[in-house]
Amino acid sequence: MEQIIFSSIVTAAGFILIIVGIWLQYTANNILNWTTIKIEILDSKICSEQSSADQYNRYTWYYPAITYKYYINGTLYTNKTVSFDRKNILSSSEADAKKLLTDITKKSEAYYNPTKPFKAVLTKEISKQRLSHYRTLVVSGVLLVISGTFLIFIV
Image (cartoon, rainbow, N blue to C red; front, side, top):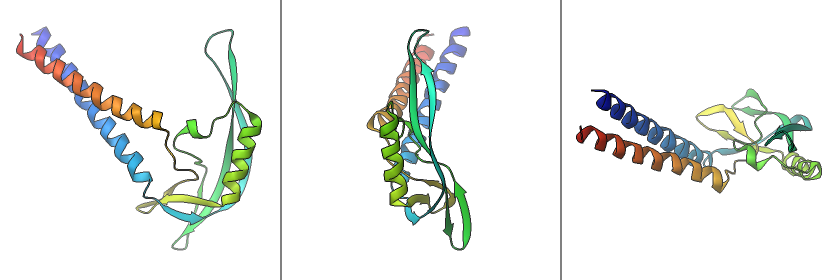
């Protein structure tokens, strides 16, 4: 009985991973179809945060923080989302972060979701590493479903 409960939990976890992985992949692909819109920059600056791998190694990361507004069908929207994938905007160099800030603000355009215009982003690229994480979720889910199903049948 305990093995059936365990295998059911493993199988359910597998299905959850598959659904989450497919949903994230779908969302990432959907972003590529977002519409371009001209924006007005309200505020822009370079921010920093520190992280550490252990007690001896501390890292400082720099990134642009931008507040912008745009109009869709006469409705004003304000947003702060620069990128859905933080890896695209984090830099260990403050100079690189400033260059990215300049490049983004010079472009003065954002990408917005036509079905949900309040969702917008200034750069819509998603790293290949991030996409591989989504695929890994799906593959892991499939393996868990297979394992859980197998465990049910060997009881």
